[in-house]
Amino acid sequence: MIESFQDWCINPDKETLVMGIVNVTPDSFSDGGKFYSTKDAIAHASKLICEGADIIDIGGESTRPGANEISSFDELKRVIPVIKGIRSNNPDILISIDTTKAIVAKEAVEVGANIINDVSGLSFDSQMPITVASLNVPIIIMHMKGNPRNMQKNPEYKDLIDEILNYFKERIKIATKAGIDREMIILDPGIGFGKTVEHNFQILSKLNKFNKLELPLLIGPSRKSFIGLTLNLSPEDRVDGTAATVAIGVNNGARIVRVHDVEKMKRVVIITDRIRNA
Image 1: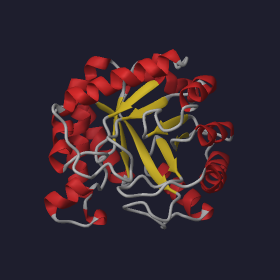
Image 2: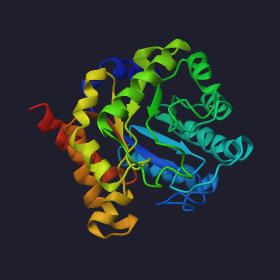
Image 3: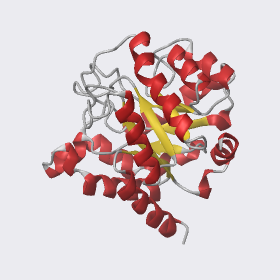
């Protein structure tokens, strides 16, 4: 499975993948506390796999707006048993570790994670680029303006798409200089991370602008506040809005969608892929 995913990274037009979210946190914006215990997190991952998830994304530290940092020790204590449990039950499923810390990424890969998902784009931990290179696994580089504590305090851009493009070019240079294979890089424009409601809609509308970098794109719009503010809905009622963002995102170039509602979004992805490839 690892080798086939690396092949997919090189030729991502084969299919769009669905990444299911498992937050092992007490404070994530949509499902904080629901899967905080190891047992509940493993059971939820199994449910998402049955619903059609291609990747399970495990996060032990909330990155919601205003979230505080936690120690590496606490993050490891949350995620390592969950990764071990998922891997034991599902030897072939792809697992990504959602972390900005090199030590967490390293230990997660050693116990079964296949992918590193760094919302800081390799910038919060100076050891992350060389650690990823040494592990030789795919890395998701996300764009974020600031950090989770301040990213939503009046984010401004002169040219949103160009600034994200330039950020990606810079981070790709840093990654490859550290020894990361360019073909192992996946890009995430960071919907909801240092963006206004309008910025998020612009990213989805103009997502195909990032295709010029010729790297797989991931989007994570699931249940986010720009949907809730537009429709005046709570997180659990944002499934329809999420479905619209997933369909448009896939049609405009996203090859991985990170979502809470795997069963429904898998259906959206299958139909949108058929339209995209017709």
